[in-house]
Image (cartoon, rainbow, N blue to C red; front, side):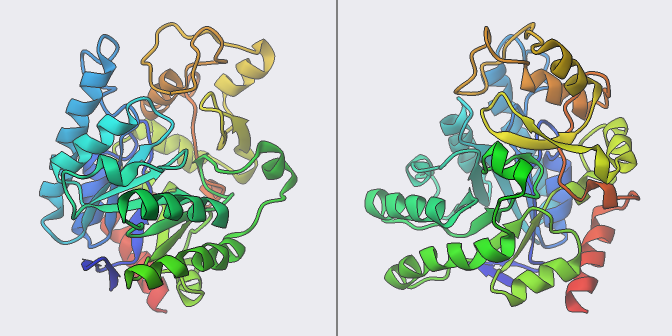
Amino acid sequence: MTLIKGRHLTLPIIQGGMGIGVSLGNLAGSVAACGALGVISSANTGFNEPDFWQNPWRANLRALQEEIKKALRMATGRGLVGVNIMVATRQYPQAVQTAVRAGADAIICGAGLPLDLPGLAVDNPDVLLAPIVSSGKAARTICRRWDRSFNHVPDFVVIEGAEAGGHLGFKRDELLAGHTKTLAELLPEVRAELVPYEQKYNCQIPIFVAGGVFTGQDVAEYIQAGAAGAQIATRFIATYECDAAPGYKEIMLAAKPEDVQIVQSPVGMPGRALKSPLLERLASLGRIAPQRCAACITSCKPQETPYCITQALIEAVRGNWEKGLFFCGSNVGRVQKMLHVDELLAELCKEIKK
């Protein structure tokens, strides 16, 4: 059993947040019902709402609230329900506040440093707040700001390594050259930065590792090295409860290791995704001009962006191979069969105990 600020997880597993629409209320609620931490992605949660393109902000917040409520009903108090919110999005503050008011158990923030997160979550002092970091420096910067400005420290921390899917906290040339620290190297580095704040606040700050964690044996090895558990995302795509369309899951199941590549996202960060017709067209044309805009990313300039990542991810989650962008972890080629969430978690738990 894993303890986070007095809250219990029966299983030391966080299901990673995957957007757009891959991890919503059904997946997160199913994971939480098994005693783990299920996570909803707040990235354009309202993409299926009829008014999404007319008023994306309103549609997103409305849908996010409903997905959280759905997940909490399914969880029945067994595990926890969290929300993954990208700092790089324009709606970041409003998404945090909506998640807190809707009763989410945890807010997990990445794609930027959530320096002001405690100030946005004041409506519920019991909500667990966690940053995603990829270096000890990032952990130090966040802890220093939270301590000085909010008299607060992270309730837990997720270290995301270079093998993760989606947006990555490393430079593109480092990823391509393989010059990035491993999770085994990052774990003690981040732990060393947290120790002074654990001592000052007389608390423990659990660390969960993410990126390339695939089996229960992987989880057990990191726990033996000092982690509280692991965050796993890609494996949850191949579950019947995953919120993505069947076509999306079939594409992931068919993927081979050589199908994975590092891409440059319009968000301004490198990412890991499957080679696809969309990426081939981009390599050939240089740019696919957006047809409409959801005003989602802070740094995005629609007149300059190489393509609309929102539209590409929406096409992906609907199973459109020709037009979709398919983010994935480095181990996607090892995912070979569909499972129910409880079967996957039971398998991981058995391997951890073994």
